[in-house]
Image (tube, rainbow, N blue to C red):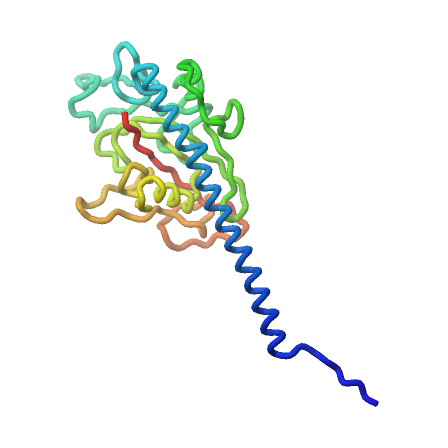
Length: 259
């Protein structure tokens, strides 16, 4: 007697496929939620505490970080600001004056436009410690200005905090700003959304470095760069040819300080 061979029915196969789809969807959602949680942690345990440290330094010393307490210029690293012949020390038309270097630790941040010279310009860590200001935990003791995280492709990235003064008319924000380097585009947009309520590279207190000035009373622009561009590229908000294994492109943000 022949034995009849049994197999899966179409209904059973459909149920299996649905279950597999649900599992894969749950994994994808879980990865997204984990990344969102990390972005919130970066803001709450790294970025916000650095803003608080900057404000604490001002409250304790009476000047912004790196400024001269006897003859303040009201600018970050103002003690090393040299006014050219006829240029004002503070006030007047300062649009075209040469801004002092940034205040960082060790070196300027990745792709940062402003310079920093170790040994000549003051160290952000030394200034904070001398004023008795407690710094965020950061990456480690001695590297409080850094923060390590993974980009969307699972590759390591490092944030770095510096401070600098921007000339009047600077599109990314005039006056004293926190400079945050090493941001992947999606992290930059997430932080901007949390800080300003909208991911706009040209408006609010959190802006992209190097962004062009827009037209008054019109909507701003998207953050440049996306997760399909690798770390060697620069570009607009769309397009890109990076592989899933590539380290994601990073951008720099300026976060305007209150003083």
